[in-house]
Amino acid sequence: MYERILVPLDGSPVAEAVLPLVRSLAEAAGASVTLLHVIESVPPDRDLLAQLEARAAAYLRPWESRLAAAGIAAQVHVAAGRVAAQVLQVAQEGKHDLIALGTGGERALGGFYFGSTAWQVLHRAAVPVLLVRPPAAHPGPEGGPRIRRVLVPLDGSTTAEAVLPFAERLAAAFHADLYLVRVVSTVPVVFADPGVGPYLAGFQEDLMQEAQGYLDGVVQRLGARPFKVSSVVLAGPVAAQIVDFARRLEDSLVAMTTHGRTGMAGLVLGSVAAQVVQHSGDPVLLVRPGPGPR
Image (cartoon, rainbow, N blue to C red; front, side, top):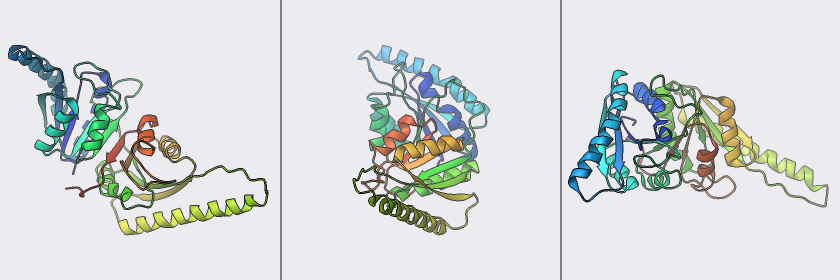
């Protein structure tokens, strides 16, 4: 797992914002990196296409050199066609086990729009997708960020727990702490009878205790690990609590499945997962439930 990382780049600083973290992960995991550019508007003239391919390769080469200078095996790949389809095809044919995307890319050489290409890749990728939002100042891949904590939101379902092996590998690679998080959603209800208040408070406490018991069981199942494993129960709006907790911890990465159990604590792509990606300043690893990691 995390042996071959595919990084689609469109020429924008937003897309390139993923490179510092990719470098850190590649160094920590001993992974190779493929830098991909997709020519979306394919001209019918072969000579013009060859010029565009040469231009794209020339754009990717400096990034390849910087990664190689850090001891990372890197290569460039230029494809032509629909961006998301080409990303998925290259990932499959190259046996990549991670796709790393900068979210919200500006249309430059290709364009990775958050809500279009990124979500198409998320919905169809057979491997985890790492999404990184750009910082205020855009750095190069030198001196990549340090991940000290990996947060795993769980909702009690085996579907949501499918992310655990991937999160554990990240924690091991970065020597980071692993935090298992469950959010108990609160629903404000106004009752005329003041006697209902204590009952609701007791019900909320029961839910918190149940959530903690569940997380304790997951920690016990994980057993001894070469990194610290902690569990945290939060209360409130699910996505907001996850984002806020990650922000308070700093140097965090959130790892979660794209689909979980529906309902009050459900992690459903388009709701909780989408909100976390859109509002979190931290990297987010999204994993579609399915076969376990290689």
